[in-house]
Length: 372
Ligand code: AGP
Image 1 (tube, rainbow, N blue to C red):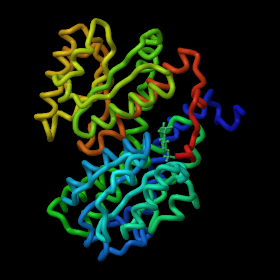
Image 2: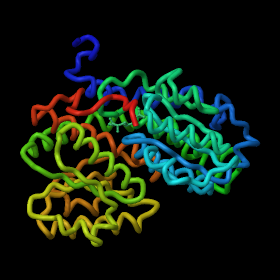
Image 3: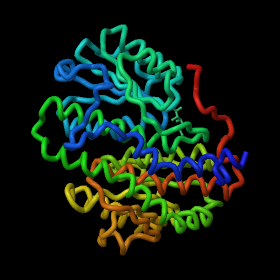
Image 4: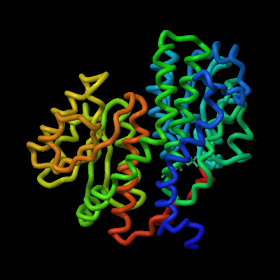
């Protein structure tokens, strides 16, 4: 009913709008007054976490994209090697696991069969399993050694939005906590990022307040057949997520590419007027990547693509090459997906509406996939 949707036309719109609160709820009670993380609820002791020699993340769909982003954060802040694998592929390739492997299963519903089978396989090999989950008491956390709940509240729309942002926050918390207990050389950076995370909800809110031009743009593209998404570093999984949202909701052909791969093939797809969304890394910090992606934008625009550029406020280098410019607040590099994904959710939702699709219940899809 309309009341259940809180006055929004669709659950998806409501859930997109709830993201600032959802993100704040994931952080609630997990940062102490001194700015350190308190994750006692993990039930895996600090001593055990110090022994971990490998992290393996298993998940499906949008949760898998959260895992891809988590890998950058975990490896950077902890120096522990991290693999990310589609849960449906995991156990069939005879993965190398042991007592010192920490397996993280990410799932909104906690009932995804592929993810459940992957975690069972990991436990059979003697690995510890930590679930990152949104549904209290569901099967995946019940069968895991420990759980970090995302506390996003119920997600009804089939297309995942607030669950994704809160999975990211939970992954950052795990990465930062591992860094904290292991005392990596990034101590200062970890403290600074925890501070930035505690303000991120307000940044997500600011993005939501500026989405009308994105909706307008989406409506103008309703008769297109294909949209491409490009990103680098943590922007690459964001591009994959943008493409997945568009497939699910708008039933359009969409693909996400690592921008550096463009010249290895995908650039052949570029033709006049093709919409290409580019997620631009911050010009601060890893500026090499920024400059490389700016030349990618130039290259595709020279071939006639219609460039839709998602870039940090104050990034002037992209302005000459952007047919449409979507501004996002400046964040530390690794946290950018929390703000960069939001315009892509809004874009897909609006395109679905413009194409007359069922937003909350896309064809052929189920909210949780409980078969293999
Ligand atoms: C996301 O928009 C999808 N509907 C889907 O990819 C989903 O993320 C996937 O099926 C995993 O679900 P889970 O998080 O409940 O395990």
